[in-house]
Structures are given as structure tokens and as C-alpha cells.
Image (cartoon, rainbow, N blue to C red; front, side):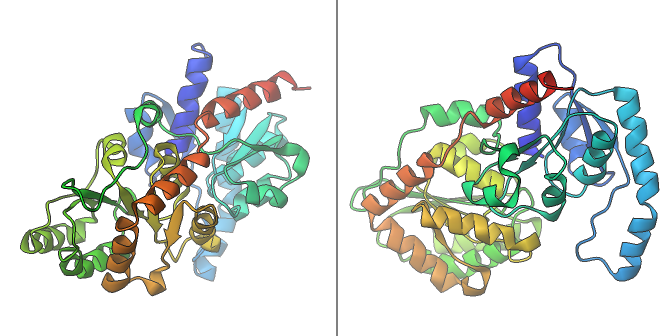
Length: 354
């Protein structure tokens, strides 16, 4: 959702007279986020197939003609110059119908391993925008452009002013730990952190934590931090992520594509805990890419415990040169011009129509 918004904002900056329409589902995050950012939204009754019982899959297939008809009506009424699929099942029928109507199309794959919908759409789309070089072999080479993931404008601006990670374990400054699991928190990370708190409290340097937690764990985590004496802020949502990244010496989070794009922009070292139930295990592949680059330490959910998490934090915090090197490696992966690169390619695609 947020890369899509970033791309839309870049389109408007490039051409203030442009119009942007989002197409989403009835129950998605877009219902709240898109109108709040001033963009129009139309909805279709699309559903994914992964994890569904065979009866639910059958109902989805039987409803496909209605979904395609809905897409046809939206596209015929709006008459777009270009349709961009930003990943996920909702993009499938919209991009497919646009292709059948002769409208130029593009798809953006945000992960190190392409989702099924994008792998299929990549055969018909005019451009395929990728965030990871490793994904290139999964699509026709002539269509691929390595652009990176678009990131929100306020983060881009803050990242330009953000300095490298500097930490002295023998000084008086607090080691600032940022923990989050996405917009809804991450239960696995929250539980491991709760178990790790007594161990973190014994570290031989001052520690401060900003922790975005799931609603179910908020009160217990606050109580655990309070009892440990660790200075902390436990919240359900971080409004100013740019400030959180800028202040952090180390980040613990999932390995979602948007989080990694933001980590690289700010040049922040991380301990990544991939979501184990992500489709095609794409978060693990994302995390492995960052680990191979020297930007992150990967802790799989099966290995995650209070002890393993506390040990990883201590190991990194007591090696400031390693932390600094990881931050530099993360920043080397950043593509701050991702949205602008995608806009240029989109304009070229529209210009080459026919």
C-alpha cells in the first residue's frame, strides 16, 4: 500500500495535471489509507486463493467473471493511460483486463521472490519493476527494470539528514533499540522480546527501547519493561517512523519489503525475523539478501527466543565497528530514486503506446 502511495505522489509531482485512481478490495488497508492521502479509490470483490479450502477456491473461481466485469466497468469509465499492478491478488484481474483492453500495463514486485500473481502478470505487462536484483531471472529480461521500492516522501527527506550509526559501549549514551513488527505488530517478536527483557536489563551498557507492539501484548510488555527498569516507550503505532529510524542504533523487525527499503535509506543495522507464513516464504528470501550484503542478522522464527534475541543484541552492541559496517552495507542497498525511476519508465511506456 505505501509503495503504491509513494508512486502516486511521485506521478503527481512529475505531472500536476495527472489523475490517479486506486483499485482495491472492500476489506483492505486501502479503504482507510488511500482517501486519507487525497486519492480516489474504487473497490472490487477480488479474493486470494492461498490458504483457502477447496470450496472457497471454487466460489472464488465462479465469481471471477463478476470481478472481471467490475474491472471492465472501472477501466472503461476511467479510461486510464496506464495501469500499474503493485503486487497481490487484487492486481491480477485489473492488470489482465487492462491488457485485454489494449491499455499499457506494468507490475511492481517488491520482494526477493516474486509472488504468483506477478509471475503470471509479468508475461503480459510492458514493464516489470523490481526491488531486488535476485528476482530478475523470474521475468522476461527485456521488460525488467531494477528500480527499488518507492518510499514515502517524509522518510526520504529525513533520511538525507540522517547520519551513520555511531555508538560507544563505554560511553554514557543509551543504546537505542527500535522494535516493530509492521503496522499491526508481530506476536512472535513481541513474545520473544518479553522473554528477553530481563536479560536485556543485565547488559553492561544503558539501553532505551521504542517498541511498536500488537494490541494484545501492549500492557504486558509495558509492565515487563517497567519491572526491568529499562527506559522504554511501548506504542500500538509509531506516527513518526523517520524519527524512530534516525535515533535507532539497531532495529528488530520483520523482513517485509517496505521495512527493508526504509532500513536501507536510513542505513540502520537490523536483526530480521521473517514472518514464517509469508507466501512462498518471501520474507526469508528478503532477509537472506540483506544478510548476504552484511546489512542484517537473520533470526528465523524457529530459532527465536528471549535468549537468542538478547544474545544477538549484546553481540552487536558490543561491536560498534560491526554495527557501523552493517549500517553502511544497508545504505549501499538504498534506492532513494525508486519512485522517480518508475515514473520515468511509466511515462516512456505510455509514450511508446502503439
